[in-house]
Image (cartoon, one colour):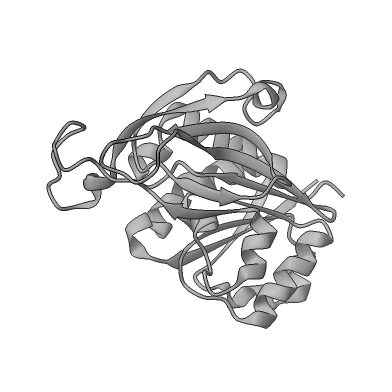
Length: 236
């Protein structure tokens, strides 16, 4: 049966919303989706379009959303629309809207940078100042879930998201920020790295890795995102 996907992209250019989504559009088309691309979240105002859509893939870092657009998106998700994305495109969107944060269940707080002493690499003054070596650990629930089943723990050198979250998300993988002498926290802090959320009849999927194209093309990251897109798609 034909399915429809809506790619909504924009916001901060540093996350390459166009190039990043172009990595996954061919995958969706191979999986039988007709894909529509919009460069503004104003499209969420179109209730008829959302009703005929099975999956929204959002890559909009920061930016803002009008109240009516958000409310129509939320209502569509509650009615069965799938909502999915990665990194800041879904977990750091619309800081002006606390109800959006409630919908998604987890929000980017920070990505600790390298120590100034050079112990984790030099700080050249660009985005790589925040690239740390870290591990994405698949938990017990993740080992049984179709999104992450069969994927082993894997290492990345990139932004490690510290996420503020609630306990209504179903966490499939985590990452732990170690205690560091140069930082004000005094014990390791574990954040969700991959999670799902059931909202009404709709499914939400979030993966926090994905700052740049290199990370998105890491075999484990790409597999998790592709599976997550399919999992989130409308089921009824």
